[in-house]
Image (cartoon, rainbow, N blue to C red; front, side):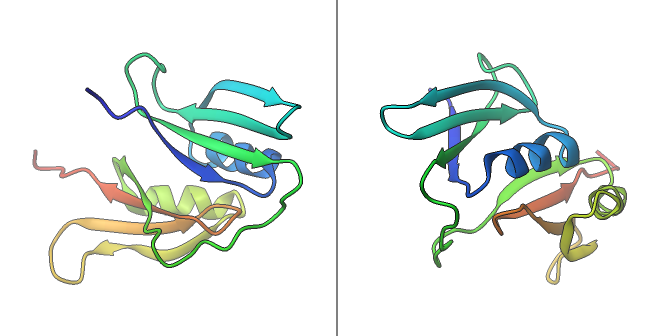
Length: 130
């Protein structure tokens, strides 16, 4: 078994694709429109669909915003340098919600950014001593 994907509902597919591709560097792996159901699925990720976990962006054509709820946490992405990753996100006009720095109760360097729908993405800096 392996994890295939995580799904997020998005209010503006073009804005979300721009964020995940242009800001976070993911590739659009697959996109499919379902006119009968009035929705589009777009799968993005860092590797090939056959052996990598993807993010499924679901755009319901008649819904332009969602309440995130209290159960959602975040998506985590490993980065070489969380400080540089935050600078790159900010340079593209996107929001950093927690600057890079050590965890409050640990030494792991983390940061949080936000996608166009308000979903949180955590950057976890890879341990440079490993």
